[in-house]
Image (cartoon, rainbow, N blue to C red; front, side, top):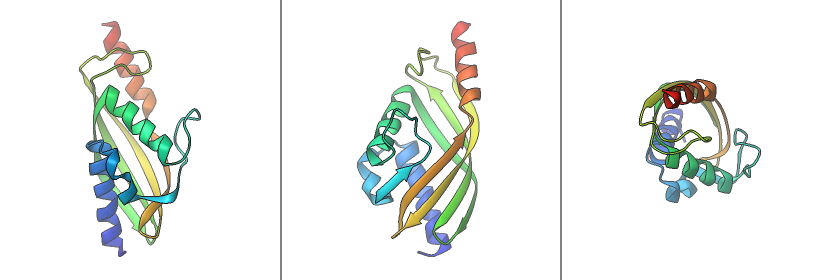
Length: 138
């Protein structure tokens, strides 16, 4: 996979899996030995844990991830993202507010055999929760 193909692959992963929430297509993107290093400790770190996280996220939000920048080298990619999260369901005991909260973050991917084998993320969840909590209190 060339660097440009790799970048397009990551773009597709974000679009299909995160923005559309289509977990039925995870096998197209994830290596069988996939590990997610950014999931909550209560979730398994493999594909099953990521499926749970995406399902929970899409139950509470209609998320849109915008890739602001992508840097890649063979087998690795780093993206800087803006997340627009429309709050449609309960998230961490905060009932749906209907508002859209914007937050930012980074995602790092390692690839093997043309699929993602490892993922790390640093997303500003504190901003998200503070804005939701403030809005829910009125």
